[in-house]
Image (cartoon, rainbow, N blue to C red; front, side, top):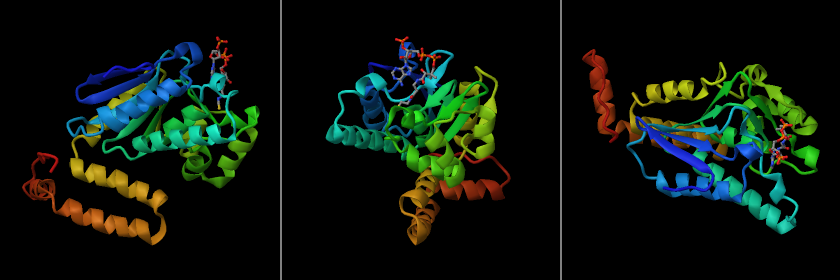
Length: 261
Ligand code: COA
């Protein structure tokens, strides 16, 4: 596994991904998108043995300061729409990943950076983190799901304001609005993300995978189809050895030993 702009490490079953373009505040260029596709779509796509993935940014200043604006000027209507669709597809690989993916937001999470964080299942913000969708400053709109996911997290009222004004918000406001799960002191983002992934790793792996899919179904399918998805997924989890083990362990007052099947 070699990547142009990602540092990828594995620590105790957790994949730690660092977007590594600090000279451009880790802006997402074409090469970084290719790396993310290679990683989530191929290299770790089938890995049941890992506990989860953490995504963070290199340096102390930025998580990711957006899409790489230097690649924007050559875009026309058709190629911009293609770029947006490619970004959507790659972020969906993250949102639909079978293990928890946690954004450890250590600084600016703007534009595509905020959008990438929102495609993750959970978000930990360092106290210096800043979030925003400043695309209208450039005369465009978010292209990697921001106009849709921001509403899912913080509601139409505040999402509309942030999208129209391009205002940035700090970590505490992001917590208050429901955009992030926790705020931690600067430098503790990855440690907190690790702690949460370790906790999730003690649960039934199939149940975790199905929970992620069921929550996504609310947004992807909606209405009765989301409830129908839950019915099927509930049946699927009840058919696993892990469910027998989990229920037996509870009744026998012991810790379950899940095997992932
Ligand atoms: N794309 C390409 N390069 C970027 C970038 C982006 N999204 N964000 C920052 N950079 C580059 C800057 O051009 C600069 O490069 P240089 O040193 O070669 O001049 C370097 O990263 C440092 O950024 P700088 O603007 O000097 O840092 P700052 O502390 O003054 O400001 C920000 C930080 C995040 C407020 C500012 O960089 C910014 O507004 N970035 C763009 C955010 C944005 O609009 N994102 C959405 C894109 S759709």
